[in-house]
Length: 551
Image (cartoon, rainbow, N blue to C red):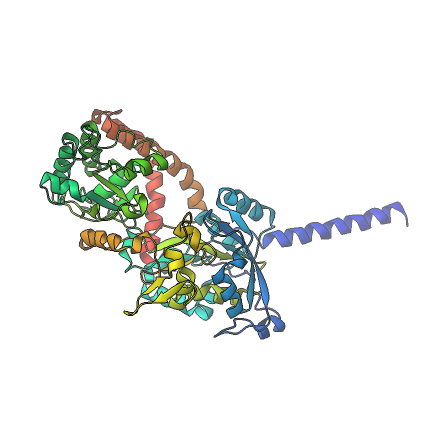
């Protein structure tokens, strides 16, 4: 063969290779037209796969299959999920085995990101902390498959929840109209979990002071003053701490409704609706928010808030609370936090100086979008969504949180279900959480599914938590927003603006409360935020808000 002919053939071969690579990559291009990605392979696939699949009932597949997951593993859960009671039982029911790919939470983000970037990702990301940005980016590229039709056809439990609570479906839907993941849902009527952080006040100190549970911000202030001035623990020292918590934001959130800011729930720490104009606002520069910070500054400057609240760590808070020094707090529940029972009672939403009285420390029922995402490597998407749908219904929720009747729970005479004694009263040296480890994997959170009061037996289900919830229940805001979703272009523009603006606003909040910044600097603070690109930030947020309203 002569040289010229050889070079010609080599050239043709290279052109074919370039063309093939180009065609392959074009399937992963992030199209910025806000249209659904319909190129995702759903593996309607081979006749063999379809013949093995059952659209209803159990088992989900006739012959066993194995699905490969990447699963975020909290420290409290077992080292091998296939040895955990509920998953052994579910594998028997479904004929679906799981290669869990357990990854400790501390290394999860890095491993997840590397797998997506390299293309060496699993069939399913389970409880892996997927961010909205990743869901949308890789969804539009076809890595995460679109789930709209699969939900409609094979997920009757989730579909029913979407119909009952349309705000959840709205929050799950990205700007291109696609759903790329399956959520963690807090049942909207389980208020103790949607408002899992609550205000508590020390009951016997109220009695010693001859005071009732505060109903207004002024009454709360007077109680805190009395705690500071009185030796209520009788040790001859003034070491009582009127208010303490893990950070200053818990108190800020509790008091927001007393000043009519943050009026769309705890998912939005910077945005709400202006009560006078009815439009979207960045409330951190409003006069009402300034008044809130001035009230908190008054509490801090008079020594009514724990001095170390800006730097306290979890262990310090735990130790101080366990010793009974706090006169009030905002936390999950003192009973589970500190092992004290009947020492604290709940407080209501406080009426503010202008008559505002709202409970805004409530999260959306859409607790987490990125709990379960199926990739284009999955050859059994129909079976996979059916596997997950079970946990959006009562039977699956009961299995997930309670286990198996006669082995982990029993039904009482009045029809209630409760853990058995070997879990609630384990041998000495073993905590209840350790006793649950061989049977359940919900400890540590982050799971997809639905959390319902009748099956969830965590801190939020305790009688003391339910009673505390009743104190503020009637003041809960009607419209609680989930996180907004954004287009890729909006994400790219928003993230740098948001990072700088939010960081500065939080830093200045702490300085205004602590007194490190004077309120004479308020106008300068507002001007600084405006110069940081607030107009561009709000333009993007308004677009996202309008989409959410109209979806």
